[in-house]
Image (cartoon, rainbow, N blue to C red; front, side):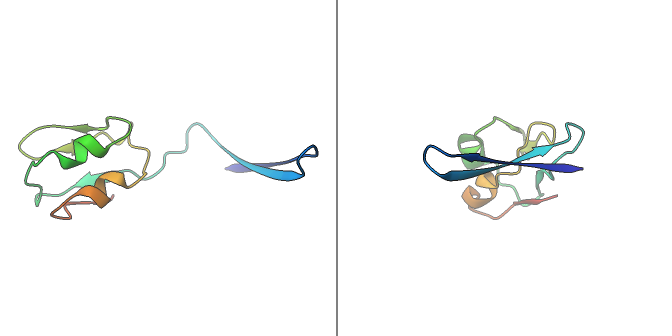
Length: 82
């Protein structure tokens, strides 16, 4: 499932580790519970625009990058990992 590519940049002697994932692998998305008060704080914080407005906001799992920024910003703690 994972393949690691270890390479060295000999000019500055720093080492680089790159994680390459299979395109079919999906990181777990966050979800918004019924505790959501639709304040809009999470929409402003999401770096990829994965959150849509409504009575209760929703996160598009296909767009969510699992960064957790929305959960950190939510004032009522209505956002959690799925």
